[in-house]
Length: 325
Image 1 (cartoon, rainbow, N blue to C red):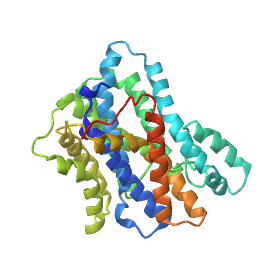
Image 2: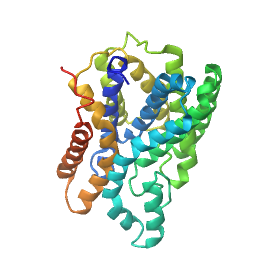
Image 3: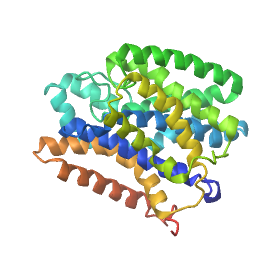
């Protein structure tokens, strides 16, 4: 995407959402850190942002003749290398989860490396747990390029309402929207991710790049972590909070961040680090714990590897050189 066409506020939000996920998993791995217990909702933000950007960038390309299969091949190739790196780090922990047995270790290893689910230890991506999100995003992207880009906006709205009804059912059944990563909740992940994704499409089709002027930039940048922290502080852990987050916090955050048009170093860095951090942090946290290290060692290691990936992937000619502050 040309620099003039970039939405720098949304770029910056990617890193903020990734940090919410890191906060969730830090508490899960090391304990004593409950503040981001609702950090899994950052996944819904990522999916909504994906729907928004796909409608904005890819739908016009599809109308101009872009081949859907070639697009999905490119999408897969973009995700795979960094996810594979995180998966390599997770191999010893998959062996532990598989009970030291080649079956199911080997089929899970192959499937997860291909970004496909395989049940081990009540997980579908035991090699690198966050990859379940990548799998669902690829599914949503595939449905988009194969069908949804041809569907009228009114029909998208109807599909979103159906997804909403199913998502409410899932939330009531499981007590939250923390579904999709485990075999028992796998099917429940589909309405969850498609609800967020379809809302993203609707945001673009109905508003385009028009920001909500009454939402200041500082609020848009802090809304995601602030809402998650507030849910812990006030004890709002009911599934209704999850639904409010998806239906209100996520779309309002996106529409508010559209008003941030100025490129900054910190915004570029936030965007550049978001996906590598998301893809490698949990295997590093788990590996550090198994080796007897605490969070004060594990978290810096995750950020250090992320920084190394960003440096390595951006070194050729600095194609995405950081803008001047």
